[in-house]
Amino acid sequence: MAEKCFPLSVEQLELLTREFPTPFHIYDEAAIRKNARALKAAFTWNQGFKEYFAVKAAPNPFLMKILKSEGFGADCSSLPELLLAAETGISGEEIIFTSNDTPAAEFKKAAELGAIINLDDISHIDFLERTAGIPELICCRYNPGRLKDGNVIIGHPEEAKYGFTREQLVEGYRILRDKGVKRFGLHTMVASNELNGGYFVETADILFDLVAEISKTLGITFEFVNIGGGIGIPYQPEQEPVDLNAVGTGIRKLYEEKIAGAGLPALDLRMECGRMITGPFGWLVSRVLHRKSTYKEYVGLDACMANLMRPALYGAYHHITVPAKEQLPHNFICDVTGSLCENNDKFAIDRALPPVETGDLVVIHDAGAHGHAMGFNYNGKLRSAELLLRETGKVVKIRRAETPADYFATLDFEALKNFDA
Ligand SMILES: *Cc1c(COP(=O)(O)O)cnc(C)c1O
Image 1 (cartoon, rainbow, N blue to C red):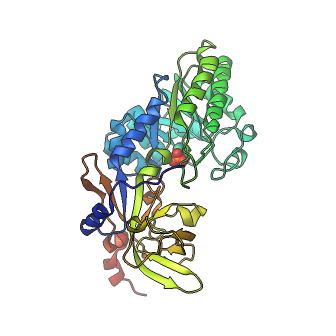
Image 2 (image 1 turned 90 degrees about the horizontal axis):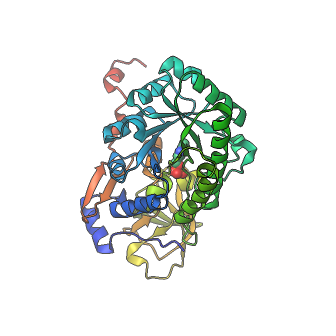
Image 3 (image 1 turned 45 degrees about the vertical axis):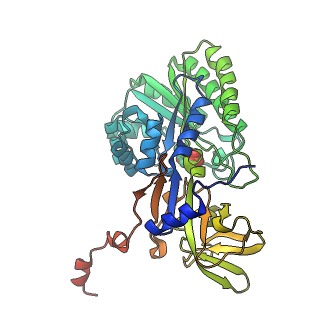
């Protein structure tokens, strides 16, 4: 059982909402740091182990700065994400740029920052050479196709748009070698929200075999393999988190056999998880605006799918608690909704909650990754603030809520006045 906790008492939470109106996302610094250390501890056997936090999961520079202080880099896949990493003081090879269908300006920026460029396609070699030049260190993304079963979110690898085929990979490294590249990395990512730790051991296995084979065929040396992100979190209370130590031990065994045991040079293990780093340590806090009884019972919140889209997008489960009423029987069956004019704007359907009233505070769990980040403005909905519970117990604002002025920032009302319709 994964325990669904929240770091503040009912009283502390009520007090907090006087200073910071709901809805807001709140993250727990101490828990994020503890988790970051647990991940590193599982891979201490690998000297060059490094996690590059997938910025898209929680693109907040305050969180990124905390993670940088724990030794993490940044995995970026767009120009603004690169700029965010740079603003945070994450630079050079602390950044891996894993993009696809990449615009030239993004390769240029990545090269300018000295980021590790991870190519998604063999045709990008020429494109990169023309736009930013070929760097000394480069990584290629492998798509194992039928070699591996995909999982639900990312799908079957042969249906996925990402990466090189095996033949293209060998050819790609050959071309890069001949163009003067000296340092090489190999990447793949074939899972998303995967709770079976064996999956990541298997991914490392595939990459170790490839490193051995391609090193021999082409006479090149690999510095690292990056097994991607995708480690899942137990959204449902009855699920179990991935046993990181078991993953670490499993990969170590393969490393000792296939890399160290085969006399290959030391290889750094890299990862680019987002979800498992911050997901369980961020919550969406919202207040009940309305109760409605029609053909069903509805609990209407002051948050909506613009604050957390996963339930509407994937039918994903997010645990919901009503802190002041957790001791009461959970026998009130309701849909928990937002105010967006789309019927899928529901955080939960037929959920058993304690008897909820207008004005109750509600906590939506596991919203710390792919939560605020997926926010959008459809229907004039504004993104909420982000707060951080510091290790000292103090709460600080790390992003203000949007205002209508933000929503209108891309419009020119002066031009509208002079516009004849
Ligand atoms: C989304 C993504 C990640 C992070 O995935 P999580 O499920 O958040 O761990 C890492 N790498 C790449 C290339 C991605 O697209």
